[in-house]
Length: 228
Image (spheres, helix red, strand yellow):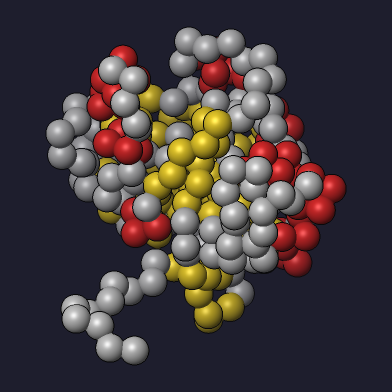
């Protein structure tokens, strides 16, 4: 096929134990999916239906990279998350069938321009300026289900310069991965290559230039980025 301009490269992530890469189509994120984080953000953690927002696939930043402090913000926050990688898509997927659509798992950080997100909330506007900016989705390599299984418990943590800031457990998720997929596919059609950032535990906070962020999900992987 001929294009009038050169088509962009397909965003992708490395795959553990494999020289091939995982192509990424869309990035979905689940908001306030840990009760303690919901409380720290000033919300009631009662089990309301989950809500979703998106990041652009080209916002991915591989673990071990440098994260450029973004423009137009003075309050950039970290949010460590388990990431679910979709291998087969569909709509109207029910929770009992959902894990059959998962190809693997990774660890990501939802970087957020909190000041811009807060301003958008007050005005009733979309969150893209706070969530969907360049390099806002640091992520590890993807681990196939055959190696990682389907993690339902285990430590999830993030340190800043060696000091622990977030420390939770996957069993504290309000909505599990199968439930997230059921709710998400009632609204969107998932496709192979989609990523789902499943939510973050309490302890989110600001970063500064020069900070080194390290974290991980027990049994999945560990992530590291440097803020420049």
